[in-house]
Image 1 (cartoon, rainbow, N blue to C red):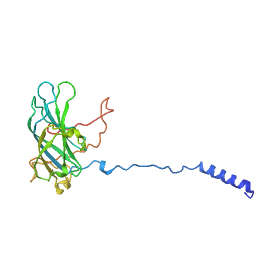
Image 2: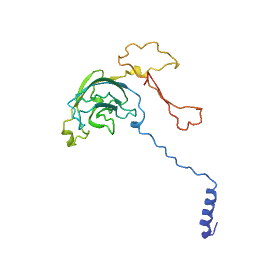
Image 3: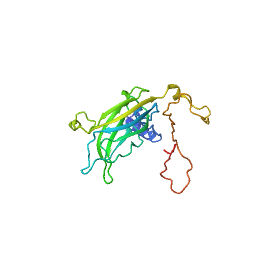
Image 4: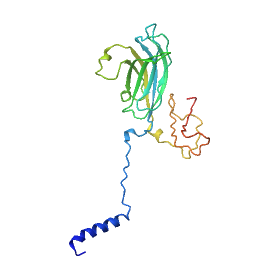
Length: 232
């Protein structure tokens, strides 16, 4: 060790041999989910009545169009809801009611699309528009007349072309703070009747499917669950 040339060599050799005997710490990076993309708890219900459309432009070369409307909440993974198809009618009347669960009233919107139904081939879009939830006053029914647009791009010159209008009635019903905090004490309480002050539009049954265990059968490598409430 006193020999200058050997000192560094001996030190490096010892470090290498000792180092091989240890399991050094590994770095594990855990990505944190963006809170804005996390599953949000329902905070209200949006009641929508599709009343009618007017002055639609026909898409079929022969005869009139067969319009129907599709409605969907943004940031919602559920399928779109559809009205019935009105045959050969450019001023259809629906008066059909729909309900949507609201999780983020400040940022969510209701997307409305009108299509021309086709027996064969792709259904052609007749127009679209959106309703911002933050512009709907709570507990107040608002009648909306929406101009049908080609796209939601404000700079799209094709939106200057008239495509007709669709008339909706929309009511946003937020849940009360005390309703959201209520939980069954033992988890087995049965509701014999609707609680006092239950709105006419009903309430919300919120179900979280956690997992399945010990599934039986030969083919269950890709299981999925089905929840049915009142036929839906």
